[in-house]
Image (cartoon, rainbow, N blue to C red):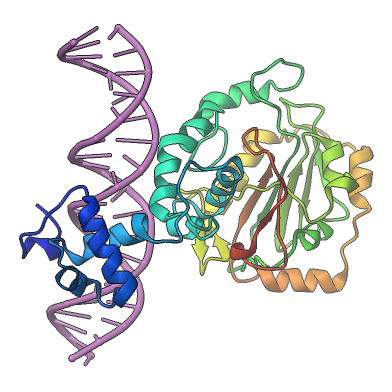
Length: 328
DNA sequence: AAAAGCTACAACCGCAATTCG
DNA sequence: ACGAATTGCGGTTGTAGCTTT
């Protein structure tokens, strides 16, 4: 077979020899690559331009960092993948000296397996169905998997809402409704689920570790997060790299699913200390207007999860995806 | 020691987006 | 405006080297 660009020419394929590398490096460092299709001829290589480009980008570039990935790099990959999915080129931008190919290979050969071993779906970063049973029994059981310290989910049912990723989490948290109703899921009677419905939003917040939620040491803008609307394999859609979306029907499905799964209609709302605490968070009218404005043009579904595989918190600055920062 | 199996990663393939004439 | 060429990207394959049997 061969490349379309190579099929016209008889060019060498397969692994590059040191001599070929030398020729390519010499040519590009002295002349630059210009048009890649002209590089093989000018460099005296029996390769196609596409192959030269790939070899340079993935292997010969002087600014490449060689060697195995550090634990910090691995965390960054996992966290960014949670948000961007298999957008290797975008993920690689967060790792200076690493290429998309390298990140992709590392993911497929190493990270993926680790996540699966931890009971997490590497595509969605959610618990695998086979592990949900285990996690339903977190309370009081001795498990090999660490218990998540908190789980929050926020869902909007607004049509055409736009999730502005510039919105800091402090703003998101400050928008928590002051008067949520409280439910206790059947399978976890100690864990309250706060729910608030308005014409624009349905908030559902489930705490697994009530202290973690309002703990001041955590800070209002340092929130372990996973974002996982359900419609595509990667778990979410992205518009312009800083806007996440899911369509209304799928969002509706999440809502229904969550309610079916977690809420027992026959259970009476119960007021409790956590509820009181949440009620203290008052929504400023101005903020509400801002929030409505920023959510108005797309739908979204959020789930904040501190997963067993996630050892550090991620927090937003006031900037889009490219400027995420991580606490370690 | 040799064959089989496994793993990591380099390289290829094909498609989509962008640029150019 | 259009088609060809080029570039960029994600998925997939091939293979060298290591481990196990």
